[in-house]
Image 1 (tube, helix red, strand yellow):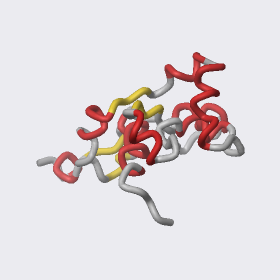
Image 2 (cartoon, rainbow, N blue to C red; image 1 turned 120 degrees about the vertical axis):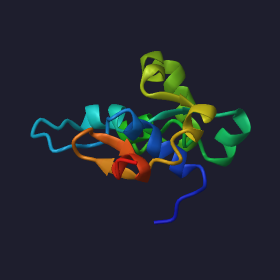
Image 3 (cartoon, helix red, strand yellow; image 1 turned 135 degrees about the horizontal axis):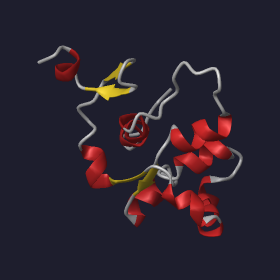
Image 4 (spheres, rainbow, N blue to C red; image 1 turned 90 degrees about the vertical axis):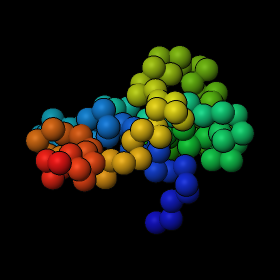
Length: 116
């Protein structure tokens, strides 16, 4: 699977906040869609180039919605605008995170994982 340069910051923010899938017998698809992906607030030009990848949580709720219609969903359902919001600036801080820590249920850096 090929990832665009914008994919990494989109995939990481939700996991930084500890919302990636865990080993939970009560897993729910809708909760996982909203809590396991981010609402990445991007400048207009990056939204256009990335085909609205920042509205990833809505994509996970309803993957059949075309990318050009995702912003309309946010307008029609403003409550979806509040889930896992992260800005471009905030996402840059997550680049160093590379490993999933089962105990902490979040991504950690190599340094943090080795106790350094």
